Length: 84
Image (cartoon, rainbow, N blue to C red; front, side, top):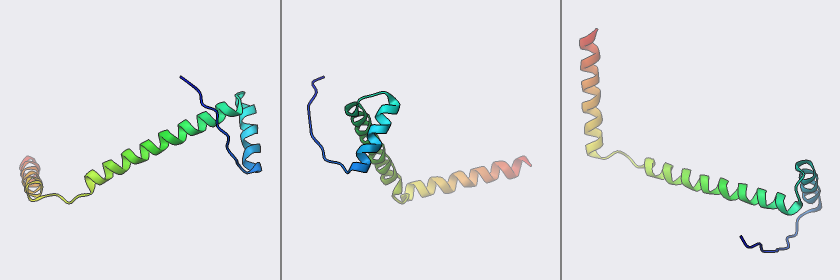
């Protein structure tokens, strides 16, 4: 994979925290930024997927689904009441 160099500006306290973490992890600052960016991108993808799943299930049930639910509850009630 081809690497690309980039320059970023960050506040000194954040830079110092990154330095400490990189030293603790025994990785370069560049590697730490790559790890952090990969994690951020993965988190964002997961959030987008969750948003799509929530949107898919957010709609109200249609008439067919409501009828199936009623029928299922009726059958369940009949089975439970008949078995006791």
